Image (cartoon, rainbow, N blue to C red):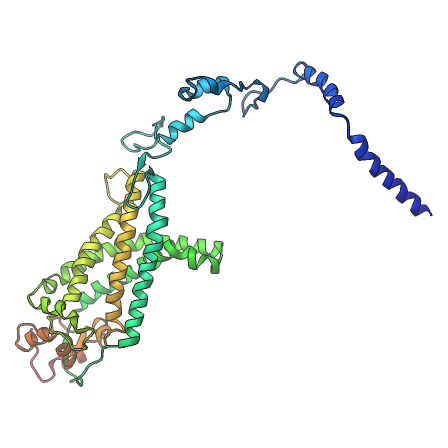
Length: 408
């Protein structure tokens, strides 16, 4: 019985509370009017500083009726509509230069929050920062990633249909030095730097699409941070090794008349019949001139700008944005080209990787893949052994002789 009485009392209290709270609007206004009138007299003085609130009843509602409303300065607008900073932000959006303590010679953009309007290839006419974002997100990332996947798929399809290019004849056991230790060192330094740059660049550009959902934000953030530093340190190594590789292999990559026949027949890749070539065929020469020299120079130059390693250059935002777009496009094309080179130098052709690993190839390999180079060796125009063999190369040097005197 006691519990029932307590329940009835509680229900009555809950029912009475909302009813008592519903005061007529007119009575509420009448009661609050004296309090509002007395508020200014009794309010404590406001402490100076900080963000001052504005009484909405003091803002002139007809301020926008002024014919010069849109021409008002920020100070004039504050008199009629305090807190309305539209004039200031309109000037910021138009690229008006403000004041800065940094010297103009070192930081010419220090007083500009928003860059002026431009139109990069593939973007709308908008401020430079937004134009760069549009080019990166709408062109470089989707199309660059798609092209890389297409090349990988084409190589996989070609390998599935053709397989590894094998030797047609039996190996003789007699070796020819194709690459000296110095040439191999230069090539491997360049190759290792390129792989480090390619992997880190792919993760930083495309990793959020295929790694972030798997790894999570924290782990992917650490991975991207580490690879960013790897990218920055491997860049100068790639630049130096690229110069060494260029001058090391320049002589044997000069165009020759026989290269035209090689290109006309596509190197015999589809027919299965090798086209005679010198030490490097026309396909390798294209990679050398277009990839190593052309794209290499563009990638290195733009990378040095992004790393801020060019002395005397003022690194404005526009300069960095253009350098990034050029760098990204050139690296995608370079990776597409070098993917084919890496394929042919590893699983695409039997003996090609061993040539770069040990420096030597069998006579049969030289005759089948680079017949004109082999003929020059047989004629004595090119020595079979171009370097002084060390202890580890003694066996290879003896095999290179193959009963024939090595020509120094």
